[in-house]
Amino acid sequence: MKLTGAFYALAAFAIFSTHDVVIKFLGGHYAPFQIIFFSTLFSFPLVMFMLIRDRTEGHLRPVHPWWTLFRTVAAMVNTVSAFYAFSVLPLAQVYALIFATPLVITILSIPILGEHVGFHRWAAVVAGLVGVVVVLRPGGDIDYSLGHLAALSCAFFGAFTSIIVRKIGQEERTAVLMLYPLTANFAVMGTAMTFFYKPLPILDLGGVAMISLLGFTGGVVLIFAYRASEAAIVAPMQYSQIIWATIYGYLIFGETVDRATVLGASIIILSGLYIVFRESRGGRSENTPVLRTRSRASSAMSFRISPFLRRSKPRSAEEA
Image 1: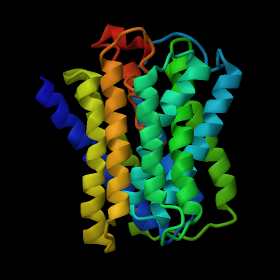
Image 2: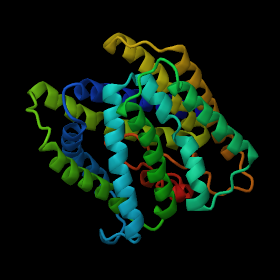
Image 3: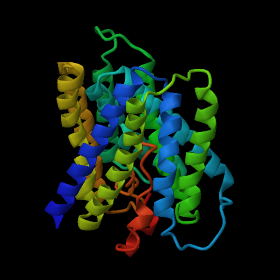
């Protein structure tokens, strides 16, 4: 079963990587606001299909309005940042920086969740931040741009949204946590799009629909992965995306991966794996926020998968 879960996870993250390739391709021609708006539009029916299976009684008024507002805003910033970063930076470089998300989750879990972070996890966080610096190589030959800031913002705000869900997820309905960010994306991106709108040929419109479909499909396959194996097996599989980034980047966009990106990404990945290892060992910590972050933070076109795991794993009710 463990190998089956790993296989599903690898397949899910391969799908997500293809999702990001389509974003990059379209991002060279259209503003992120326009791509996000139409992707959200196509995502509504898919998300509603998942929500009609939710039999939880209640309404759409949030129990924690402020936390819901913070999460909604953070999710929008995260989405714009991810779409823009993939549009302007090499795929491998974007992934290397987004892989810092577990580090940020670990840091934010202290003030928001009251998590205890010991010396070992702090050392992993510091090592991971060193890896980020290596990727960015200040004073080197890299040309800094808004894309690098966007990738780092994606890591930060993706971690922030995950931590908020970890804090309020038990008390908020799934519909509230899924529909509010989607609705906000639709309204805000639709407004912003009016300043950047370009007509979409049918082929490009199909590409936008493909973004929604791939994000949804990746989420479904990830559910299979978590049902088949524990989080400690599934979570590390996300780092396989750097392999797909290298392959796709070279074959489709003519990108090459330099030594600094390889070295920095390796440090970030190892630090993330160590955090997963420490959390999986248990101990004084009860939150294990990295392991309990099931959904893919850098894709608004995916969805929260933990509610759909509760049917088969009752103990997962606290997961984000």
